[in-house]
Length: 104
Ligand code: HEC
Image 1 (cartoon, protein in one colour):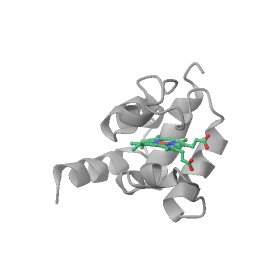
Image 2 (image 1 turned 90 degrees about the vertical axis):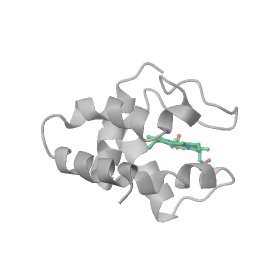
Image 3 (image 1 turned 60 degrees about the vertical axis):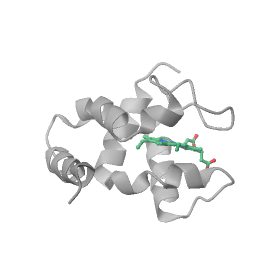
């Protein structure tokens, strides 16, 4: 088991606690999201990558679940899909709630 996989399992176990929302910030940094979407979610690495700060939590969650499952597959989806194996559905929810609270 890699360190990343171990962390993912440990974080998933923690995700059911009240600490879920605050884990969003930690997950955002640890799961490489920051590399492509920027530190605050509003300065993407490439002009074709989306700004995600302040996005509706439900929308962000749906998009991530669809990218993970393959239901959403655009020209740029491959970049995002490549990291979706790092996050569980509970972590996706926590990340979505965190993103919705960031300033656009
Ligand atoms: C390798 C670059 C990369 C990484 C790492 C990455 N993303 Fe993405 N993300 C993208 C791209 C590119 C898209 C747009 C995909 C498309 O066009 O279908 C996207 C789309 C999204 C969307 C949907 C935005 C919308 O408006 O529909 C959300 C939400 C999102 N990413 C959140 C995250 C989170 C949270 C993480 C960390 C777990 C993450 N991303 C990691 C590149 C990345």
